[in-house]
Amino acid sequence: MQDPVLREAGGIDEIDVARAREYSLLSTLLMGSPGAPMLERLAGLQGDGSPLGLAHAALAAAAARTDAERTAREYFGLFVGIGRGELLPYGSYYLTGFLHGRPLADLRQVLSRIGIERAVGQAEPEDHAAILLEIMAGLSSGAIPAPPATEREIFDQHLAPWIARFFADLEQAASADFYSSVGALGRIFMEIETQAFLLSQ
Image (cartoon, rainbow, N blue to C red):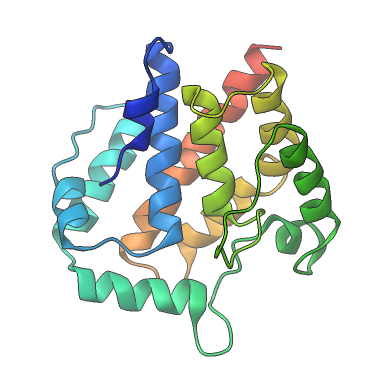
Protein backbone atom coordinates (compact mmCIF):
# COMPACT_ATOMS: atom_id res chain seq x y z
CA MET A 1 0.00 0.00 0.00
CA GLN A 2 1.17 3.55 -0.52
CA ASP A 3 2.70 5.15 2.55
CA PRO A 4 3.43 8.79 1.67
CA VAL A 5 3.44 9.58 5.36
CA LEU A 6 6.76 7.83 5.90
CA ARG A 7 8.51 9.98 3.32
CA GLU A 8 7.46 13.14 5.14
CA ALA A 9 7.69 12.03 8.75
CA GLY A 10 11.30 12.83 9.61
CA GLY A 11 11.57 14.30 13.09
CA ILE A 12 7.91 13.71 13.94
CA ASP A 13 6.91 12.00 17.20
CA GLU A 14 6.60 8.21 16.84
CA ILE A 15 2.99 8.25 18.04
CA ASP A 16 2.08 10.88 15.47
CA VAL A 17 3.74 8.80 12.74
CA ALA A 18 1.62 5.81 13.82
CA ARG A 19 -1.50 7.98 13.86
CA ALA A 20 -0.70 9.31 10.41
CA ARG A 21 -0.29 5.76 9.09
CA GLU A 22 -3.69 4.81 10.47
CA TYR A 23 -5.35 7.84 8.94
CA SER A 24 -3.60 7.18 5.63
CA LEU A 25 -4.65 3.52 5.58
CA LEU A 26 -8.30 4.36 6.23
CA SER A 27 -8.21 7.15 3.65
CA THR A 28 -6.77 4.85 1.00
CA LEU A 29 -9.39 2.16 1.62
CA LEU A 30 -12.26 4.66 1.45
CA MET A 31 -11.01 6.39 -1.69
CA GLY A 32 -11.03 3.17 -3.73
CA SER A 33 -11.11 -0.59 -3.44
CA PRO A 34 -7.75 -2.24 -2.75
CA GLY A 35 -6.00 -4.14 -5.51
CA ALA A 36 -4.33 -7.52 -5.12
CA PRO A 37 -0.93 -6.18 -3.92
CA MET A 38 -2.54 -4.10 -1.20
CA LEU A 39 -4.78 -6.95 -0.08
CA GLU A 40 -1.69 -9.14 0.19
CA ARG A 41 0.02 -6.57 2.40
CA LEU A 42 -3.11 -6.09 4.51
CA ALA A 43 -3.32 -9.86 5.02
CA GLY A 44 0.09 -9.66 6.70
CA LEU A 45 -0.98 -7.12 9.32
CA GLN A 46 -0.27 -8.16 12.89
CA GLY A 47 -2.42 -7.24 15.87
CA ASP A 48 -1.98 -7.33 19.63
CA GLY A 49 -4.66 -7.78 22.29
CA SER A 50 -5.74 -4.13 22.34
CA PRO A 51 -9.00 -3.10 20.62
CA LEU A 52 -7.02 -1.47 17.82
CA GLY A 53 -4.73 -4.50 17.52
CA LEU A 54 -7.70 -6.84 17.31
CA ALA A 55 -9.22 -4.60 14.61
CA HIS A 56 -5.97 -4.87 12.65
CA ALA A 57 -6.06 -8.66 12.98
CA ALA A 58 -9.69 -8.72 11.80
CA LEU A 59 -8.79 -6.56 8.80
CA ALA A 60 -5.92 -8.93 7.98
CA ALA A 61 -8.27 -11.92 8.14
CA ALA A 62 -10.82 -10.16 5.93
CA ALA A 63 -8.13 -9.30 3.38
CA ALA A 64 -6.90 -12.90 3.35
CA ARG A 65 -10.31 -14.33 2.55
CA THR A 66 -11.23 -11.97 -0.30
CA ASP A 67 -9.76 -10.85 -3.62
CA ALA A 68 -9.56 -7.64 -5.63
CA GLU A 69 -12.59 -8.43 -7.78
CA ARG A 70 -14.83 -9.08 -4.78
CA THR A 71 -13.69 -5.97 -2.94
CA ALA A 72 -14.24 -3.88 -6.09
CA ARG A 73 -17.84 -5.13 -6.31
CA GLU A 74 -18.31 -4.51 -2.61
CA TYR A 75 -16.89 -1.00 -2.86
CA PHE A 76 -19.18 -0.23 -5.80
CA GLY A 77 -22.26 -1.39 -3.91
CA LEU A 78 -21.35 0.54 -0.79
CA PHE A 79 -20.17 3.85 -2.21
CA VAL A 80 -21.17 4.13 -5.88
CA GLY A 81 -24.14 1.96 -6.78
CA ILE A 82 -26.69 2.40 -9.52
CA GLY A 83 -27.79 5.94 -8.80
CA ARG A 84 -26.13 5.97 -5.38
CA GLY A 85 -24.39 3.59 -3.03
CA GLU A 86 -25.62 2.19 0.25
CA LEU A 87 -23.61 4.82 2.16
CA LEU A 88 -22.82 8.47 1.48
CA PRO A 89 -19.45 9.18 3.14
CA TYR A 90 -19.78 12.97 3.32
CA GLY A 91 -19.77 15.23 6.35
CA SER A 92 -22.50 17.47 4.94
CA TYR A 93 -24.82 14.52 4.39
CA TYR A 94 -24.31 13.11 7.89
CA LEU A 95 -24.74 16.50 9.55
CA THR A 96 -27.54 18.03 7.47
CA GLY A 97 -29.03 15.28 5.31
CA PHE A 98 -27.89 17.07 2.16
CA LEU A 99 -24.76 17.06 0.02
CA HIS A 100 -22.64 20.19 -0.44
CA GLY A 101 -24.14 21.82 2.65
CA ARG A 102 -22.91 24.39 5.12
CA PRO A 103 -20.40 21.97 6.74
CA LEU A 104 -18.58 21.75 3.40
CA ALA A 105 -18.47 25.54 3.05
CA ASP A 106 -17.10 25.88 6.59
CA LEU A 107 -14.47 23.21 5.92
CA ARG A 108 -13.37 24.94 2.72
CA GLN A 109 -12.78 28.14 4.67
CA VAL A 110 -10.50 26.33 7.12
CA LEU A 111 -8.60 24.55 4.35
CA SER A 112 -8.17 27.78 2.41
CA ARG A 113 -6.73 29.43 5.50
CA ILE A 114 -3.95 26.82 5.73
CA GLY A 115 -3.33 26.71 2.00
CA ILE A 116 -5.00 23.41 1.06
CA GLU A 117 -6.67 23.56 -2.34
CA ARG A 118 -8.85 21.00 -4.05
CA ALA A 119 -6.76 18.87 -6.38
CA VAL A 120 -7.30 19.35 -10.10
CA GLY A 121 -9.52 16.55 -11.39
CA GLN A 122 -10.73 15.55 -7.92
CA ALA A 123 -14.45 14.85 -8.29
CA GLU A 124 -15.18 14.33 -4.60
CA PRO A 125 -15.86 17.31 -2.33
CA GLU A 126 -13.50 18.00 0.54
CA ASP A 127 -15.90 16.64 3.17
CA HIS A 128 -15.59 13.11 1.75
CA ALA A 129 -14.35 10.86 4.57
CA ALA A 130 -11.29 9.74 2.58
CA ILE A 131 -10.18 13.31 1.88
CA LEU A 132 -10.63 14.42 5.48
CA LEU A 133 -8.67 11.42 6.71
CA GLU A 134 -5.92 12.15 4.19
CA ILE A 135 -5.75 15.72 5.50
CA MET A 136 -5.50 14.43 9.07
CA ALA A 137 -2.68 12.11 7.99
CA GLY A 138 -0.81 15.05 6.54
CA LEU A 139 -1.35 17.23 9.59
CA SER A 140 -0.36 14.57 12.12
CA SER A 141 2.78 13.63 10.16
CA GLY A 142 3.84 17.21 9.50
CA ALA A 143 3.53 16.72 5.73
CA ILE A 144 0.96 19.53 5.75
CA PRO A 145 2.45 22.52 7.58
CA ALA A 146 -0.15 24.31 9.70
CA PRO A 147 -0.45 26.04 13.08
CA PRO A 148 -0.49 23.55 15.99
CA ALA A 149 -4.19 24.03 16.76
CA THR A 150 -5.29 23.19 13.21
CA GLU A 151 -5.31 19.42 13.66
CA ARG A 152 -7.60 19.65 16.68
CA GLU A 153 -9.83 22.21 14.94
CA ILE A 154 -10.38 20.00 11.90
CA PHE A 155 -10.93 16.90 14.00
CA ASP A 156 -13.29 18.55 16.49
CA GLN A 157 -15.34 20.52 13.98
CA HIS A 158 -15.23 18.47 10.80
CA LEU A 159 -14.70 14.83 11.82
CA ALA A 160 -15.82 14.19 15.40
CA PRO A 161 -19.47 15.24 14.86
CA TRP A 162 -20.11 12.48 12.31
CA ILE A 163 -17.22 10.19 11.38
CA ALA A 164 -17.79 7.61 14.14
CA ARG A 165 -21.41 7.21 12.99
CA PHE A 166 -20.22 6.72 9.43
CA PHE A 167 -17.75 4.02 10.43
CA ALA A 168 -20.40 2.30 12.57
CA ASP A 169 -22.77 2.36 9.58
CA LEU A 170 -20.03 0.88 7.39
CA GLU A 171 -19.36 -1.83 9.96
CA GLN A 172 -23.04 -2.81 9.91
CA ALA A 173 -23.81 -2.22 6.22
CA ALA A 174 -25.80 -5.00 4.58
CA SER A 175 -23.43 -5.34 1.60
CA ALA A 176 -20.22 -5.05 3.63
CA ASP A 177 -17.88 -7.99 4.17
CA PHE A 178 -14.27 -6.83 3.84
CA TYR A 179 -15.44 -3.27 4.45
CA SER A 180 -17.14 -4.25 7.68
CA SER A 181 -13.66 -4.75 9.12
CA VAL A 182 -12.62 -1.35 7.72
CA GLY A 183 -15.62 0.17 9.49
CA ALA A 184 -14.67 -1.49 12.78
CA LEU A 185 -11.07 -0.30 12.49
CA GLY A 186 -12.19 3.24 11.71
CA ARG A 187 -14.71 3.31 14.56
CA ILE A 188 -12.16 2.11 17.11
CA PHE A 189 -9.45 4.45 15.86
CA MET A 190 -11.82 7.43 15.98
CA GLU A 191 -12.76 6.52 19.57
CA ILE A 192 -9.05 6.52 20.48
CA GLU A 193 -8.47 9.83 18.72
CA THR A 194 -11.47 11.43 20.42
CA GLN A 195 -10.20 10.40 23.85
CA ALA A 196 -6.66 11.54 23.05
CA PHE A 197 -7.82 15.00 21.98
CA LEU A 198 -9.97 15.29 25.10
CA LEU A 199 -7.04 14.37 27.35
CA SER A 200 -4.77 16.87 25.65
CA GLN A 201 -7.04 19.85 26.35
